[in-house]
Image (cartoon, rainbow, N blue to C red; front, top):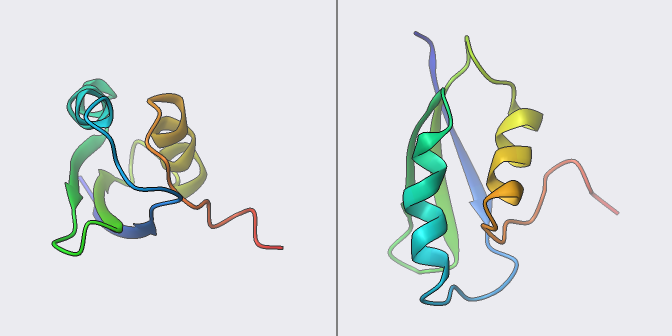
Length: 75
């Protein structure tokens, strides 16, 4: 396993409903950890790079409704 850690800014403040998304994202094979930063405006994601790419990680986060600012959508 090759663990990689990524950092994402949140696109909006989190709500109570988002806590379920944080729990559910771990059901995706290869996602190891999603942790909210103490400042509540960023998340740290640890994933298995032998299973997922960065783009796939972003897709998983978006699919579960975690409001990240995508790195690939730079204006």
